[in-house]
Structure formats: structure tokens, C-alpha cells
Image 1 (spheres, one colour):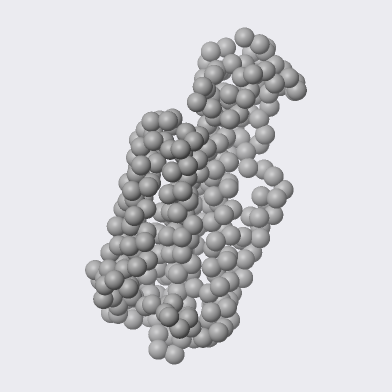
Image 2 (image 1 turned 90 degrees about the vertical axis):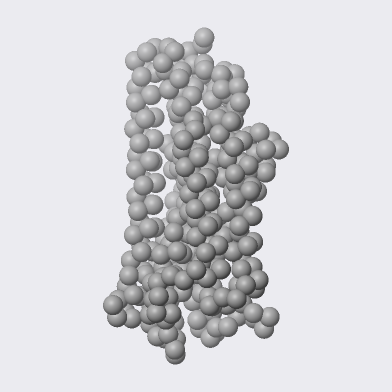
Length: 47
Length: 264
């Protein structure tokens, strides 16, 4: 691999790792939102 | 049991038990008050935008603005994200795990356990980046991806310690027994952090030494880009830590609400 190839690979690692983590955090956020909405519905219908 | 409508402002005693994640963990109906959407506040959104913009500016500085290193060439530019990732992991991330673990053991407040857990997660993320970018920089310079150099070896050990810490946390249900075990692990595991820092002074190493008695071994424009990257990655760490802690807090409250909804 050329010098620029290693540079590209290095930065690809950084963006894939950071991007993967941020996507995972975003998915957890969506799951929490859905769960809150479900529980609110449940409480409303249970009254 | 009292019932509170979703829009009600009445906050019977149990709301506090749900909201503060208290040890009592009382399961009562007051939790029916609407929950705020997790992690949605203006200042946090602004912090997120600033963090991402500063990382992009740092990227521009690293790739375009910084001069090409005379001996190593373009591959040295990996350094501008390799070193800040190592700094964030070894500096704030694992040190916050250590401090919050001690505070948890003193105060027995699960919020500190959650901060420690979130910070360990980010510490592992940034150590992973360090351990992957380092070999990609090393290969064209040293002729090998990896050597059992003291700095590299102690960093790898650190990564294993905190991966084990996260595995321990994920294998036990949230509560004080998990928090106690994690806190002890977080305190003992941190011992490797100063060893990683000092490894280049204590043992013979081929790992570059950036800071010496005479200051930084860097050209002034390279130093400026490094400082920018350090600030950007630290800001990103702070933002992600706040978001993750808020998510963990909310998850904990939701667990109590689930218990409540099953009992209704």
C-alpha cells in the first residue's frame, strides 16, 4: 500500500469508528423515544 | 395507589423515586407524568453542532493546512487524530471512570455509576481508534504494523481491561451490586493509565516522544493543528458523554416505568 493509502486507511478507521458509535447512539435514542411513546399510550388507555 | 393524568402537574412522592433512580425504586403511579424526550435540549444540540464542526475544521487542518513532515511524508498526518484519540481515552475518559467509581463507592448514587459506564464506553472507542490508526502509521515508518513496544503493549492491555469492564457491566442487571463491582474494577483498572503515560520514560521504546523537557517536538503550524484536533476530539467526547449519560438515566427511569406499567 502507498503512503497515501495508509493515510486514507487511517482516516477511514477514525470515521467508521466515530460514525458507527454515533449511529448506535442515535438508534438507542430512537428506541427510547418509541418506548416512552408506548408507555404514555399505555398509561392513557389504562386510566 | 394514586393515578396521575399525563398532563397533570401533581407529583406525588413516587415521582421522585422514579426520577432520581433512588435506591428505593418504589413502583407507583406518579411516573405517569410525561417524560421529557431524551437528550433534546437546545444547548446540547448546539454543543453537538459545534463539536462536529470543530472536528471537520480539524480534519481540514490535518489534511490540507498542516505542512508535510520532511521524513515521514503524508502518512504522518494520521498523528493529528491518533494522538488526540489517545489523549481523550487515557486522559478524561478513563480518569472520569476512576473518579466516578470512587464517588459511587462513597455516595452510593447510581448516577455516578452510569457516568462511569458511559465514559468507559467512549474510552474504549477512542482507544480502539488509537490502536487501529497507530499500526497504519507505523507500517510505512517502522516496516511493521505492530511491535511489542512498552507503549503499544500497555495500551493494548488497557483496552482489554476496559473491554472486560464493559462486558462485566453488560452481564449484570443494573443496580447497586453491578455498580459496586464495576466501581472496584474501574478503580483497579485505572492503574494501567499512568503506566501507559510513563512507559516511554520507564522503558526503552521506539514510540515517538512528543513532549520533552524542552517543550513540544513540533513545527509551530503542526502544533496549532494538533491543538485544534485535541480541542475538537475533547469537545466531541464531552458531547457524546452527556448524550450517553442522559440516555442511561432515561433508560433507568424507563425500567422503573415498565415495572409500574406491569403492576397496573
